[in-house]
Image 1 (cartoon, rainbow, N blue to C red):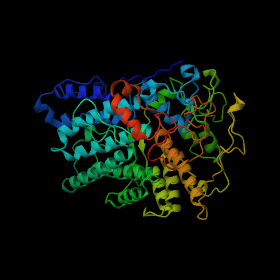
Image 2: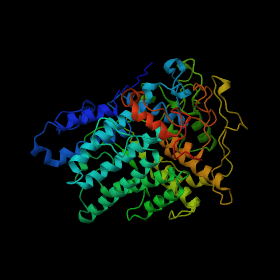
Image 3: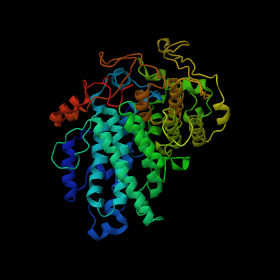
Image 4: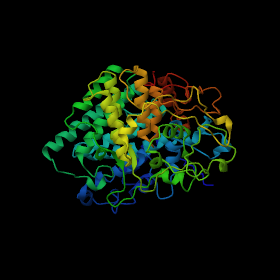
Length: 541
C-alpha cells in the first residue's frame, strides 16, 4: 500500500532567510522544482537575458500557480494529499479514505496529525508569498499589469489559507524582519478586496492602451496571458469572498458583490471563463487527485456524493466517479470519520474519475452563477432572478461535464438524497428518516422559505464545485448546507462537536516552535482556543 505523506518544515523565519538568499542571486530549492520546465534560471541569467521575454519577472508566476494546489511531478501527489485531500476534501463530504493512516487515528476522524496541518500554511508562504515578493520587487513599478496578475493569484491562494486557520500573517508580509504579526481575519479579507480592486483597475487600464497584448503569455498556465480573463477571474473571486463574509459583515458583502457585477468585464458567464490550471506552454500539469485515487489508492468517493447523486439520478455521476470494483455497475462511497480496520475493506469502492491530464479546477462559471443566485435571494442586484441564475448554474455544470438532460433534472420536484448503506459496517449507515439525511429537492419553488431556497442553491453549488473540497467545506461551514454526514468516530477529545463538525485546523506546530510570540497573539485574534472546534470570523450563522 502506498501512503506517501508530505512533510514540510518551513516557517516564516525560514521564508525571510530564503528571500535574502534569493535577492543575493541564490535559488530556493523549493522554487527550483517548479521551474524544471524552463530553459532559463532567472537567478543565474545575465541582466540582459533577464529582459528577454520578461523571464526575470515571468518565471516566478508558474510557481505561484502550481502551489495554490501543490502540483508535483508525475506520480508524486504527496504535497496535495496533506495540503487539502486529507482534510478539506474529506470534510466537504466529497471523498472518503479507505486507508488506516496512523493506525486509524488521523485527520479524517479529528485525531489531528500536526505534520499534516503544517503543509497548507507553509506552502503558501514558501511557494506563493515568496515568489510574489520577488514579482512585487521586480514588477510593481515597471510592469503593474503583471503585478496585478500576481496579486490575484496571491488572493486566490491565501484566502484558502485563512479559511483553514483564521488569522494569518498578511498585511505586513514583505515589510522586513524575521517575524511577522498575524492579522485578524476581517483585516485580511478587507485587504483582499483592496488588492483585487487595484488589480482590476490596473489590468483594465492596461487593456485600454494595449487591447491585444499578452506580454506574459508563456508563463500563464491558466489563461494563456489573456488579461480580460484575469479581470473576470478577479471580479468572480471578489464575489466569492463577498458572499463568504455575509453573516459577519453583510453591508460590506453586499457592496463588494454588487461591485463585481458592474465592472465592464463582469464575472464568469460561460465555461470558457473557467479558471483551470492546465498543461500549457510546453509544461505539463499533473492532477494530483489522479495519483491519490490511482496508484496511492488512498481516496474514494464520499458517502454524501453517493447519497445525493444517486438520489437525484444525476447524469454527472459517471463523470465524477467510476463504478466500484467490488460492486460492479454501482457507485459506492466511504463515509468520513469511520473506524477503518482494514484498507482492503473499502479499496474496491468507487475511484474518482480524474486522470493525470485533467485540469486542476480553481473556479467555474457554475459556482459564480450559484453565488449570484444567493445574492439575488438576499435582495442584491445580481443582474438576474434567483430562479434563472439557479437554473443557469445547473446548466453550466452539466455543460462543463459534457452531459445532457438539464431541463429534465431542473423539473424534478420529488427526488431527494437516498439513505446510505456501508456494506462492511452497519454502524456507518445513514437510514431513511435520519436527521443527517437531506430532504431537499431539485426543482425551484418561489414559494419556499429563505432557508429552504438557500439550501437548494448551496446543495446544487456543492455538486457543481466538485472536486474542490476546500471551497465546498468553507461554504458548508458558512451556511450549514448541504447536509454532510457527521463523523462516526470523533477522536478530538471533546474539542470538536460531532454535530457541528470541524470548523478549522490548528495553527502549524512549526509556528509554535519558531514564531511563538506571534502565533500566541494570533490565538487571541482567533477569539477561541486553537483547536478544530473554534469558529472563524466569518463563520457566524
